[in-house]
Amino acid sequence: SSRSGKRSSRQPCFRARPAAQTPAHTPTENPRGRGSAGLMASQTEGATFADVAQKEAQVSASLAMEDEAIAAMEADLQAAEARVELAEARYQRARRAIERELKDSAEAGAPAAGATAPLEVPDHLEADREPTHMGSHTAKNAGARTDKEVSSEKWLAARAAEGRVRDRATKARERLRR
Image (cartoon, rainbow, N blue to C red):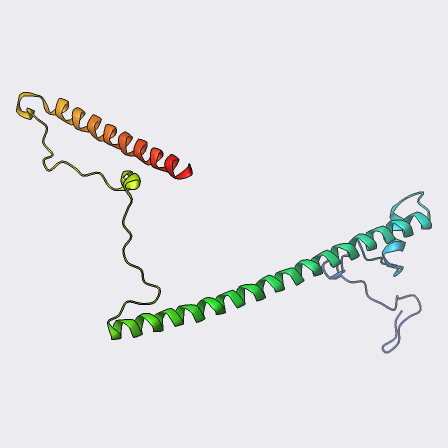
């Protein structure tokens, strides 16, 4: 029997927690407080402490190497970000200088220092120009043929024109390579 202020020697001095409040142990925690090596030793049957310690050392070494690799990658990333910032700053300076130059030259009426006259296209690059189209889009003798025949001929003519343009462009590229 229990007394009002004191506990009986038969009653436990702690109350058991309900299952929802009991902390779940992670695989690296040991409920006995011996660290991860103690847990691994208790989990592997027949393994000696030296084997477990060696495995723990290997894991620690591989983690240390991964940490070094990550640190090196972070340093590379920071260096790359710094280079990008410098390039952006140079770009902004150059853009402002060009804008000022264009604004000054527009006010003065003179061509800008970077502006060039339109280039003349050499004869061997004529193939790159757009082909001239016929003024009339109607086929010859269209009244004597059906609409299907006329549209078929138009389609064939368009495909042939595309082929000719493609051939001319290929020949022009080959001439430039030589």
